[in-house]
Length: 255
Length: 175
Image 1: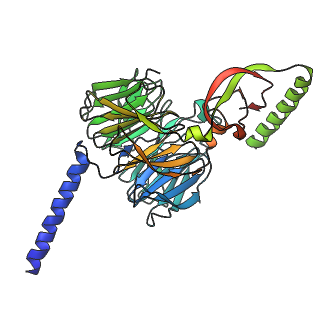
Image 2 (image 1 turned 135 degrees about the vertical axis):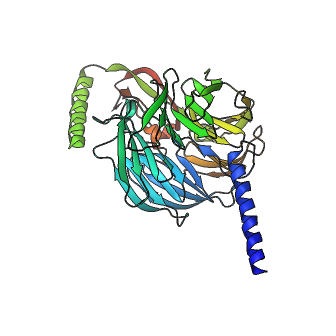
């Protein structure tokens, strides 16, 4: 009796897991849940909390009653925070001088885990995370220029979030936002276009394709669909591993 | 060290400039802030689809796709068919750059405020809460992505909506 009870609970949980998985994977409209932002976002939602960054502070709002957000906490992080990326109970903050990781064990009050300063770098650094690796770009051009900086894509092992370790640093030109899906990394490079990388071996990232005419600032990859925003508007492509992305549509900028 | 040198450089430049000013006006091309009143910045509304003027950040939830128009608001699209996205509406939110969505509520920056907006019906978005002066609107103290002379921001005159190129006489701010 106990066993069959356990078995049915297990089956039930499995079913829920599968359903939850489906909900995440399908592109059908569902009124519940949280959406997906690009890598340059300054707002992030994790569970019942909204996290907002301004130049140097991280602010937390309780949104358990979602129509009625309530301020719970403010933490001074450091100067020049540019982006925020939520991933598995952690917040990854991209700043002008590196990356900060905050722990959300107490989601109402994020606590600092670590800060990584990428040697002498000072640039604009969006960050995305998948499994145990954080992918960070460092751009030095335009308003981000604060001296000589090597522009690069940096991969950081964050399996121990209190002690992130740089795995690999690859020179890339003019990097802006980025996205990761499985072994494929998507990199926006402003007026230098858009590139697709294989990062299966983090020690040796390989550029697979480059769409040189596609001005790009940020990207959201989701279930084989690429949404790419740039100065000419939004482009959507379908992508499959190792194949050239297929153009789907373009929403122009006409202002 | 670099900062100190920069400050010294700036200081000496200011001194030189202020000396110059006594003799004749400095007239240069530069940027000046376009102000909006605190009331105007809080004036939200939803309209039918309009053209995107300056593409900002993107956000997606379910079949909906959101494109921020830098400093203007959010374009909402039905993206059920990514080969043919359909424009639904434009949510006019002055000085908006960022959004996030949970369930049917969209959170957005709106000038100095943080707002919560019910988008159950994206053609008729409804404000549910406004947290005034939620964060320092530091971005508007100087023109973004710009180096050169500009007219200093005077917060008494309102909130900076945008920046425009113009002819400046004796500008006191420079980046």
